[in-house]
Image 1 (spheres, rainbow, N blue to C red):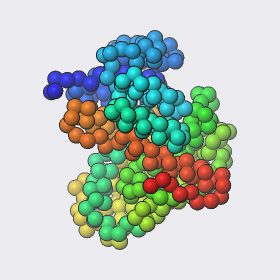
Image 2: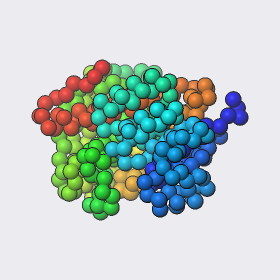
Image 3: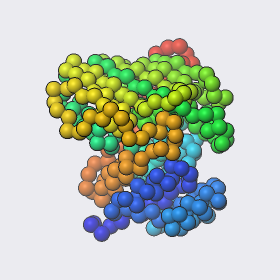
Length: 343
């Protein structure tokens, strides 16, 4: 087993795929075998860069018995169909966020994963940072006491040109949503990872400055099974942009997570990490300013799971949680009513 290699194929050869390729290369018992794309030019450039096989189509890649797992790095509207096709071909699946665009599709992915016994890993790299893990340990140890509330702030900047450069961006069919579904997904996933099971949401969405089908600005509130409350404040119209921030407030103290660093820690349990007032980088203004370290750690976890060494931390059920919160806020904005989430 120590010599076994999990061989990955990537579908979609854009910006996200390059981060996945670097992450796979960093994992000892993983290898990137090939890639495919609807854009021949993108596939040519990507496969030359990483010196891998270029498949003429996704179908051809799925037929290759050398491929153990598929990493889906295509526009969001393609994720569900491609995940199903991969599992039907007997491949494990890594899906970039969001795993799909509806709860019905999420349930189909979960059902098929259960039926086939194949692994489905939803990319949630923010959970794997040292800071997030430090806060999670404090939550699990009861260091906050009774959790009271949290505030997630995601004040990003994306110009109109960002949406105009790709036809699927900012559309309901291609993106599934705006700032919450695209830029804000990882922040909402991290919020739920730290606070537990969300049970109801309400909120508002609007397109204030960008000419897109979906929201450029959103405000929401979430109630968790612990009765803790959280607010979500998100936009792509902030000029300047600010680093993502989560403030967690408990009866025994508070913590502030700024991007992947801890900027405040007032809990009775000591923090083993340095408290940083300035974060090293932020994707709030530049979508390319993303570290691949979290992806590498998530791939390490997946490969370890496939080799029988550890549990899978972010499976399809975990990937559905943030999706349900986001879709619940969308429904609340449409109806003007709070939305109860599935247990």
